[in-house]
Length: 228
Image (cartoon, rainbow, N blue to C red; front, side, top):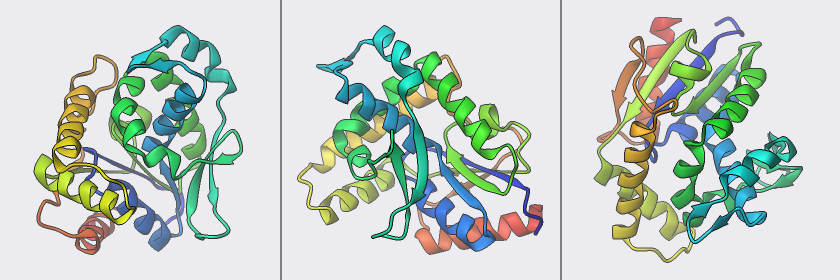
């Protein structure tokens, strides 16, 4: 396989897009870019600077400080996995909290934030050889991507997966709260005016409600080999 393909993987939250994309990128010797982690990093920055209070966002202040936000991905020496870095600090664990999950969709629907992150994503992937996952990669970031995959699963299945992840991490949270968050994010992501989550016309849909991670990887890898 030539090394300059752009592979766009979009879909709903908690479908395992990032975990799957990381494995696929490793298999292809490509670079993996987790666009969702970028929006989570912006959300964390907004919390750190006090731009979010009682779930209300000081949009103007956040926009004024976007230029100060530097996001990068690099391998962590301990886990040997790519982690998200915000202004030079490893924030991989912080951005996966429920607090961030509850606010990342409202932050992501701010047009200036999307413009900023889309620009970063396009710069990171302009030379190809990437697997990028997110909500709008095949529709907005790289509408001319070589291969587009759209991952979906039922809200209940996705909430169960996320709930088990939180349990394994020792976080105390109810299944009800996780399912509520999944459904709220689905609604916001799919109904925002600016760059909403939707399946690109030329994307292939994969429903992994009944597939585990390995099976999903195998399915998508087969599609990539067919489409390349």
